[in-house]
Amino acid sequence: MSLMETCSIRLIVIFLALPLSFFGVLLFLADMDAWTGSMGFKEESNDLFPTHRKLLHHRATVTAEPNRMWGDKCSKSDIVIHQGPTAPLPSGIPTYTVEIMNLCVSGCNIAGIHLNCGWFSSARLINPKVFKRLRYNDCLVNDGKALKNGGTISFQYANTFLYPLSVSSVVCA
Image (cartoon, rainbow, N blue to C red):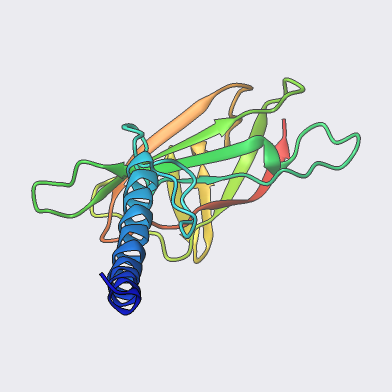
């Protein structure tokens, strides 16, 4: 075999190998994306829970404000809200379960819990002693009564979308 033929064969092999290598890298990256997606950890996601959780699915939200003024007995950051989808109504309307917890580390009871809730409404009746909208963006929890330290109050609502809920004010009891 001549030198010219050997060089031609090498060039053909290189030109065929480059696109195949590039294609292999793409397959590897696609496989990595599928692997990380199946674990529930996608970089572009703002989800707070991985998708493999059963109780609170990947669309679940947790709302808490981590700041407390030094010396405060309690603050709105002691109230944590978990919210996630549950089985839809027979009519097909999505439902969501909300858990509102008092996680005060100093053992305080918290009353007068008001939430930012927009135009909150539900196709499923909610006990107004548990949760009710007073006016736009103002919902009252537990009829204004104290939620004991470590206590949880929960309810379900039905609507075509999840309402973002966040604590607007509390009263230390």
